[in-house]
Amino acid sequence: MSGSIPPRRALFLDRDGVINEDAGYTHRWDAFVFIDGIFELARAAHARDYLLFVITNQAGIGRGFYTEDDFLALTERMCARFAQERAPIAKVYFDPTHPEHGLGAHRRPSSMRKPNPGMLLAAASEFGVSLPHSVLIGDKASDLQAGRAAGVACNLWYRTQRAGGSGACADETPRPEALATAILHDLRDAIPYLR
Image 1: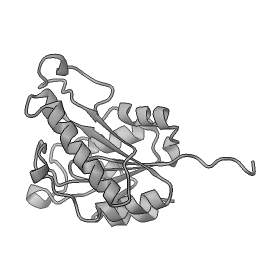
Image 2: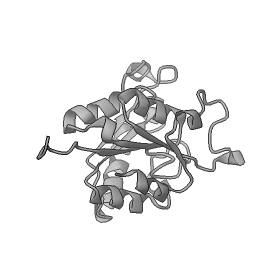
Image 3: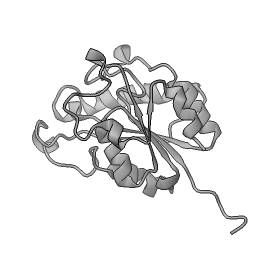
């Protein structure tokens, strides 16, 4: 039908390992190191009218390693930097639970915790995003599983060079490469997938 409104698209980004180097439970700004290429990618997405979302498991809150206030303070500074780079983030979704190691009320299963698709479905509902027209970038199998479960058609695996150079946790099942639309070695390589 001519004159129809184009679908609202989103770029979903995992945080640790995609936006910033994953040092393990990163929660302080002085330890937050942006990954090379993230701002070029984010600006390209924004220029193509993609909404930018961060979807991140934050079990460190539930495990008592840092507080939700710590996370929110860091998030505010991260979002300010994206805005400064002319690539504003529409919203950051996070889940603080862990089904085995969470403390108190945080020790429970959650439909929002990846590999479950809850955070993506929430963004789609809240912002009217078309998930089949959207793109997800993650560095773990759980990110890609969430994207596929939500109906995201393009799920890109950013293969970081972790300890040992494997680019993936040895015990990840299924393997991320089996779930990915494509494998990225540089975040800027995702730009052609933003159509």
